[in-house]
Image 1 (cartoon, helix red, strand yellow):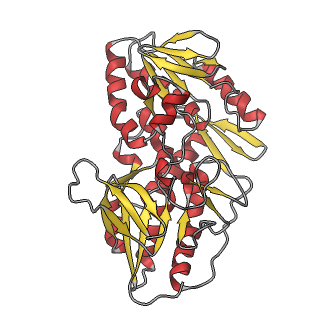
Image 2 (spheres, rainbow, N blue to C red):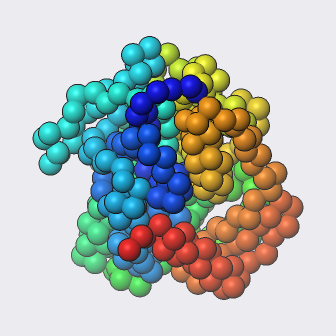
Image 3 (tube, one colour):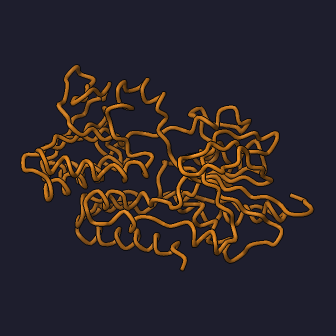
Length: 384
């Protein structure tokens, strides 16, 4: 990218990969690069520690990375707001103001754009798929809203024996139901009931059969009921199931698959069938050379992989390198996600299932290992 004068790099979102871009820019910041970060919150909630927060192991602050020290070290400007649309022809981003930030500019210009806004649940699509869910259920995304509302669930559980159901039996749903069970057994009324509604498939569907067996054994051990049914809707006090049955439920939590942000439609960027930004091996948009994306907001055209924090974290360093390379007119470096990643599935505090490809094992040591990795990630980006 040949240029003269100051160039504008706009980072949309402060996801796992962008934290690493900011940390890299703190040490390698070209004088002719002006960096702006657009995000609604002054911190990033590290999703890996959310189940531990639910279980009562971590405080809200322990699972957060404050952005201000990173921004100061980088010399970047923070604009508090949300992306509301991208105009790739004009190279501008439309900004929606958030509560408490009245001076938000209506648009932000860019020469280089990087998108790492994470996963969202589109309320309109959610209502189509699961009527009543947007009104009656507590979704785990956006994670900031979920962590703010969780104390109200704990307060309810102290007043009465609650019936809690988690809809979705991927890693997020499994970890959430174990954490909730542990927290409410310790600090709630006796007689609380816990259910995992899988949505139809088996628990831990995208894991190996060995990991599935371990997860099911732990669920049985904790007295958590598993229903292999679709959730067709949610009403006051009830979860509606695909077989016509209704599950009495005071606290329905949603840990279902997420959507691509609606504002990507009409951006002019090449998108996948599901609406995610299509990127190549360099995390670069397949249609616009000056746009990059990482994490749950994009899909690799060459090597599709699961949407998980593990991959988002791995994409950070190559994304940082390629943004600076694009700025300097240098060759980009492909990022090859590993075929197997270490996966640690927590079953509440003190026990986790570890897997790597076909290998799997479990125990207190696996949870301790996960705790160390998660705390180290947050600590690394808390710049003094």
